Length: 94
Image (cartoon, rainbow, N blue to C red; front, top):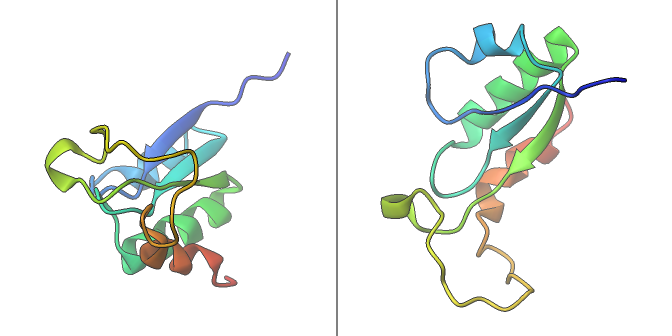
């Protein structure tokens, strides 16, 4: 059996590099609660160097509640509602 050890990273904590040595995949913050284009790019680059798979960890525009409060949204988010601008950095080729 293979287990995927995953962590949310790119949120401004100072230990992402150490954590990347322990996990097989990482969700990179790319929404409004944390992260910015530079931190996203740095996290993805570090993950690539260590052979760690990456995924996106988007959030809603809700910094006060860390992007977790209910907003009464339908099942479809409108472009930009989930923090699409910062996620653009994740689409750049490394």
